[in-house]
Length: 255
Ligand code: BEZ
Image (spheres, helix red, strand yellow):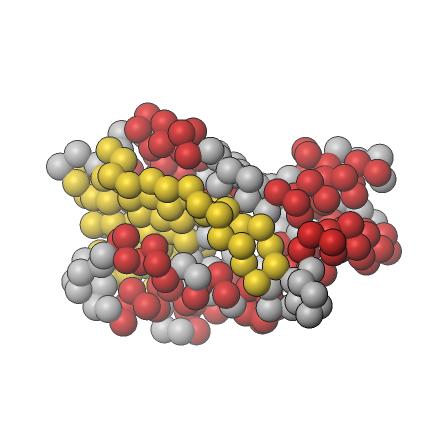
């Protein structure tokens, strides 16, 4: 389990781009009105709402109670649920959905076989699993700098990492072992402009690393990471970007 908490207001300010940049994967999903769809790791429900507007019967799940509260405030059917086997509970929908959709969430789930098994159980025969998340060398520079910042302070930075960024072949094999036929799968670089300073990104997404440090040491560690990365990730106009790599896939169960 990651030591990451989600404040919806901070998330909207520093990560509102996540849902916007997730729109292309909705095209891979090709949702039809009336379809039953599970949005796995729905966050504050921005894309769940898009599916609802398109006429789908959509349920959002997320492990963060704060994000689920924000999704419910949009009038969505949203439930706190962890897709990994946690607290004796996983996705327990028993073949209810035509499709499971996921954007920018699967890299937070470090037991992908459990997740894929849960998705399989939630789908009808012939159902599809379509998603996008961080793969390969996703945010490599930031990841390595965070690990180094903890290592310098006598901690095991790599062990603190909450992220799962598989190679394309690795995730394809996991889907196939989970009983899916992979219809499309792509890994591609998506350099992403950040809405604020890299320190804001670290505040929003780096908590699993930074919470290993005493609170008083965290601001200096964040500044240190940003300073180390400024040469590569700060643009001449002072804005920042991140070295995102996306793994996008569409897979289907046998009918
Ligand atoms: C991502 O969307 O790839 C991502 C976001 C936050 C932390 C790590 C990865």
